[in-house]
Amino acid sequence: MEIMKGQVSIIEAIVASIALFIAFNMIINTGVYQTNWKEAVGSMNGRDVLVTADRLGKLYDYSFSLSAFNSEFISKLDSVNDSIIRLDAVGTPGNVAYVACDCTNDQMNYVQGILNSVKFNNRQISFTVCSTALPAINTCGSGAKYPNALVIWGYKDLTPQDTMNNLTDFINNNNGIIEIADIPNAKVDGIGTDDDVAQKLIFGLKSTSDTFPSITQDNFLTPQDAYQAAYQAYKAFYHLPYTATATGKGNSFKMEGGQQITCNGNTGNFNIQNNNFQFWICSDGKAYFDTSIPQNNKADIVISQGQSFLIGSSNFTMNYIDTPDKIRVSFKPAYPFNDFVVADESHNKLLPIDDDKGKGLLSMGFWDINLQKPISAVIFNGTDSGKTAWVADFSRTGLANTGDDHRQLLSSLIFSVMNKNQKQKFQQIGQVTSYINVNNTDILDIYRIDLSVGKPF
Image 1: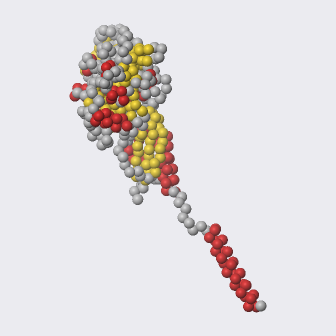
Image 2: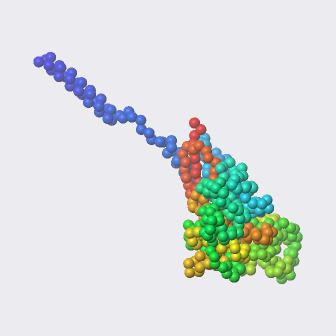
Image 3: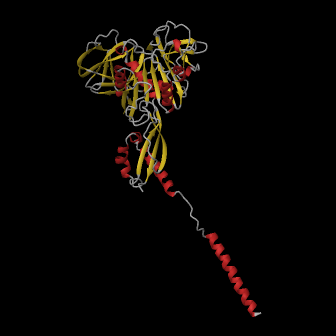
């Protein structure tokens, strides 16, 4: 019996040991749990960096200057100053942009001259405009597959298959095309076999046999919502300041009332609706305008920065006076153009191919008032992946006869269709934190910032 009792005790001890072993394994889990702690810390640091920069009022500037972001801000933050930082602004024009132009040298220089003077929310964008000849699309040295935008000036046969393929691929890569041309009605009338398929598929055009009315002005079609194809161009025309340069010396002049003004500045001309209006930029930081028709070389209004003013019946705002030789003026609704739709009865009797009136920007009236089919000077087409705009050739009588209003229109069209997400592709580093930022200095700009924070090891 004693032997049996000893055996039972040993068995009990073994069972108890096994139970304890199982219990300890249940309490103490030896498995490795992946917490992603480094990634979480990276995301938190990225968020804190962007929120802090925003509250300091510096985020817009830093969005377009990584060097300033690093030297002025990141270097002072212990949490990320040993990290690799990458900052991308998405959905807004970058500091550099590229435009290819299938056009003459004079037309290319015209486009370059317009874009050189544009500031976007008081930020200078460096545009490179280069020559191209379809079907090829010059990259303009962008380092990307395509430039941000393509301008085709003058009617060209776009039906060759290689041209069609390249233009389609260009649009599918989020880029935009502006066509400045008088389109033969017969090329988009759907009659016969000579239709220009590219004008239909790429620019979304069709023609009508109706007769042009006797109207001498083109007026803006006000978009009903921000989703309309023409909305971005409408917004840009009325908010992007247009730069007018004073190229001559303006030492002194007289006011309409006879007062002699010692200017010690510069003088230039603001050309709208086929009229030149002389202006002076003076050492007192003010701009003076002669708004009389015909001109009498006497100023009748004095304008300070930020002030609204009238020329004829058209409204403007003096956004900036950049002494000694530049003023930046924004057009205000409702600005009328002298008509440039009508070349002759055989051209430009155009409609959006799907009859969507929201694709028209400027109109000289309606082909059908009941159906609201506008006689458009500008027609948009495209999707979120890329956009196009056709505009009647406002330069058909010569570039010298175009006005500052035409230049502002072309600038607005380019800004509305150009690729705003083009950037060089890099391997992703660390954690990416996205942040929505808004700037409304001159034009409402809502864009996304992607901040990548990673370690070099």
